[in-house]
View 1 (tube, protein in one colour):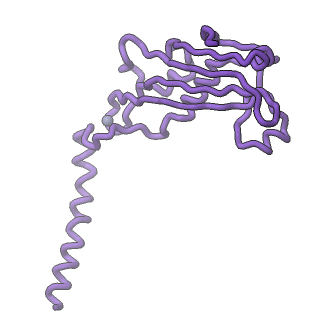
View 2: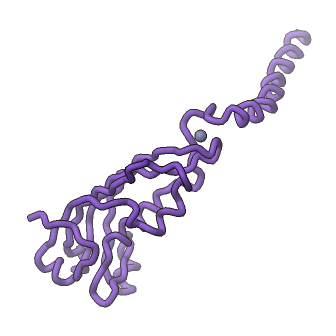
View 3: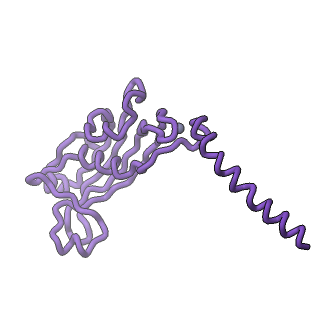
Length: 173
Ligand SMILES: [Zn+2]
């Protein structure tokens, strides 16, 4: 059964009923994420985040949230400072309130609830922030004309060297 998306969930209740949720919400709800996005040039209508997830029990009988999300982030290209649309499709699974022993025994990360409640928007925001590349760049390396000219100057000098070596080899023959 699919239920309408909310922000906060009572973990034990949802695990017991194997709660499954899906829906969309505005990316602008994720306040911490905003500082990673392009300062002015974001999509005019605002972007949504599509998400679906369920509450299950792990092999250690620990509550888990397992889901996936899809959105696009408007990052700032570090080469031309223009907008760079980066599609994001992520899967996530987190144990909830696992004790230290389980944390050590499992490769799955643990999320700690707030008095038995979790905020799914916080979970999604963390996943997105972790997935943002340290340096975002357009695929087209010529997106910044000035950068291209500056970067190609030493390259030309390097490229001449192998030819010079070849010439030397030829003359010694
Ligand atoms: Zn660029």
